[in-house]
Length: 218
Image (cartoon, one colour):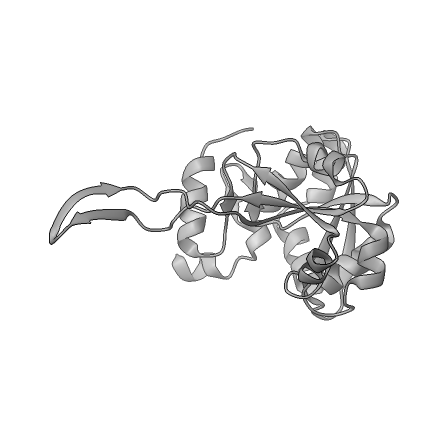
């Protein structure tokens, strides 16, 4: 069972009655987005068609247009976003990682705050382990997975098309190359988010997310 689950591409992991990609697209549709571009590899496209006809589902049920930007070879996050930009019509657009869930806010607020800058959603991470409070050699109490007192990149962005086309790499990531450069230019904003943020990087993260969404029909 564990082996079979590990072979499922992350966007197609089931969370309740929907896949991860369906939840993200549905969330955007619920906030008035009419057009979504999925950046996919050729292999992922095949899985997507085999697992769920997400294109037809949201065209019929959510009245949202879904376009697919297909990578012939792996381009990395920066290259994939730059290639997908050819479908983008507006100067400012919303971008997010499929495995970063932040449903307790309106994504339009991130776009509104961006103005003429790229803006990053910031969230405080939760320690993956319980915290133990000690005095000398004695344990006083346990604190269950406390939230840490600093912000991290939550994987959601309001992007400027002109910046993506001129400063993003054709291949490779943008998180460690482009974002630090924009920060040095004072051209990068942060939007502090205080709601629940779930990132699915490990199997334990998936089990945690599954427990939150199991049986949900939202």
